[in-house]
Image 1 (tube, rainbow, N blue to C red):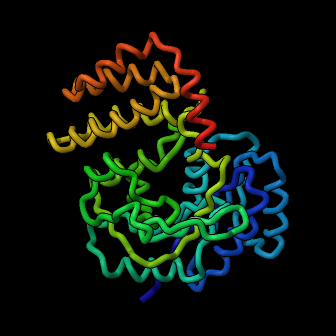
Image 2: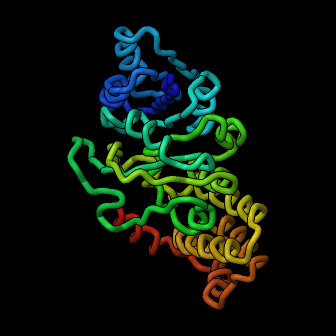
Length: 311
């Protein structure tokens, strides 16, 4: 029986310090039927030159060197258009795959239901030097879930995105990532989980690099498009929901986003989220107070203190 082909789409943006290690981890897999596609999203730190040096050893690897920065979602879709694998991995070029990552995940697919569209696994977080910081699940901060996880995904970000292996037909049916959004994972999770199941593999297969300047560290900074995207995703979820329990999960998500957006001074996004929460009858007295204060109070001092504490 022929092994299924796996496409690894390696996305790079200003990761010159780490891209070679990341790409070497992909090429060092103990799985033979691997398709590697590298996309550089108009890096300005010399990443493309590092990739070109890498490609001298692997001239068969397709390389999309984008001339202008288009963002993660569009860059991934450019790579996806070239992919021919049955399964797809979306790998940022500062993360590292263990050599058994692909083979272990492919074997895991044989043990799960045909309804599963995405598998994910344990991960460890590392710093700039590659030193261990923590584990995603083993440290007890997150709990993995299996099966129909749509409602859980609305309420809780429990999946480490770089560990996912996705069925390509699922990505194709969804039209890939939504290119109008600044980030991909939350939107992909809910859209895919609405129709397919998820399965957790407890093996530690991926090392995720935590950097102070990474996307996840600046979600609520002034001018950041990620919160605007989160607002749009919440409205998408409201349109997809089919039960009161799912609506309540969305209320909890909105409440979380409102608290952070309010403290960071994102007044317009707070107003949009509050309007959606009102339609879901989740507008408690606390959030009515926040809505009242949203346009009247200057919280710049609080924001500076939060930023100083966090960074």
